[in-house]
Length: 326
Image 1: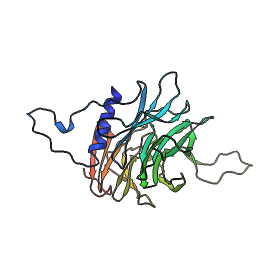
Image 2: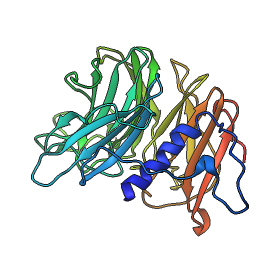
Image 3: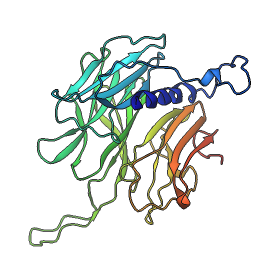
Image 4: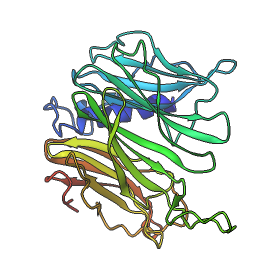
């Protein structure tokens, strides 16, 4: 039931927020539920032991639902199905990848996206045979029946935060991807063989991004922010001026407010706070923001507990994320 309720809310966010519009509701008696936002039952094509749900829209208006099937006695399976909006699922669930090495983490789920050339793209986290995790990316050109050999986008020790990623269509044949990586970065030249001292490292979790073409070739790769919150998912919505990336930042004094940056196809803008909550948090709260966009309008939603007051907040931008209203 929790899964169905959560997905109903996610579907409302996907369908309502991007357009910031709604149909005129019919007349209702005082105190009656608003007809345009009344909850509807949504039967999902998942097994009874499924989790890590994700929703994505396609250029032709369908919804893609992805999840991990963890039925006992079977190997974990990353699956998806398409909803055409007419009241039915277009097909039986299709399996993307199967294996016990598939990482099942409610805070770090896989994600699908679609480009206008008809291709589907997906990322997921997978355990290495040794003690590392790999962030994988794959592409399908036949509606998800077959998938390309995965590209290892990043790898890190299993004790290190990796993933919490977001995908978006960059062009008709390429996607952008942003992810967190806590793998230490060498900040000076390695020592000579005669010294036993390890090279200085930066232990902060960094936010990275890159663009991947139809052959999974990487370009425009770089660090968006060298210090981000360790295990809070990131989110992206495409504005008329480029993808708007929002994430939970982390200052040197552990202020963990939401920041936003936009990609112009070559560079990311300097990250700016969506709002200065001033939430000082010594550990990762394991939640990140959500964002939706239509043309140059964008809405960001997030959780904060600044001053010991838990809040869910929304802020709106009319300039593609350059600034946000109260």
